[in-house]
Length: 304
Ligand code: SF4
Image (cartoon, rainbow, N blue to C red; front, side, top):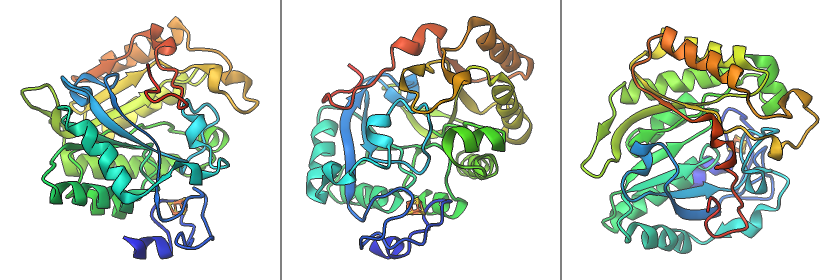
């Protein structure tokens, strides 16, 4: 694992940073296990949460810095990551304590800058006879070769496909090339998993791909373009999850167009496009959801 971090090019930022030393890259994290929270979560899509919830491992910091991020308490790269650092053994213990309660899935949230650590965790769990369904819950700003490395370890990809346009990906997340990178990542995930979602008796997807998209106010053309990309270049049978939970409460930068929730009219345009394109497997969040997803990472269970 450490070799990748000596000259870190794990994600498309390509920092060449030696994360085993003080020279940290864009994500400003080192070689350790920087984990902001581990808890059992029921609020994901039904095949992700299953009957007993998913054990979500929230990594600290991120390789995108979205101005509206609802996890800003832990995702902001300016925060001192050391306060989130756990030993490998502590990390494994936190996870197994939750898996021992009957939780069948293990989700890695914002994992793009912690891929070697993610693989180490999964390998160690296997060596201890734990075989949870592994879920890679990513912002899609991932490299194809990194996803190929993950292929033997990840059962379900849960990517968020954010932007189709370079100007807003730069303005809102600091990554001008996000659309090109993310479209290629989604193609790779689809190549690995296809359209099928294989659900077990306890309601968990054991393998597959669900593409998420968070609809942003005043950016409906972006959502429409994302849907058209998925329909024309991936499949209309792939599972999509359209989210309306955007809440301006987390805005950290002057972006007046984002400073309000989504309207009914805006969301309706997106829903009509889903219908027009004939998607067959869509999870649709209720518009009222914006108040149900306000995490507080100071709490042991941030979503409760
Ligand atoms: S994982 Fe971090 S250090 Fe490595 S390339 Fe990405 S942002 Fe840079």
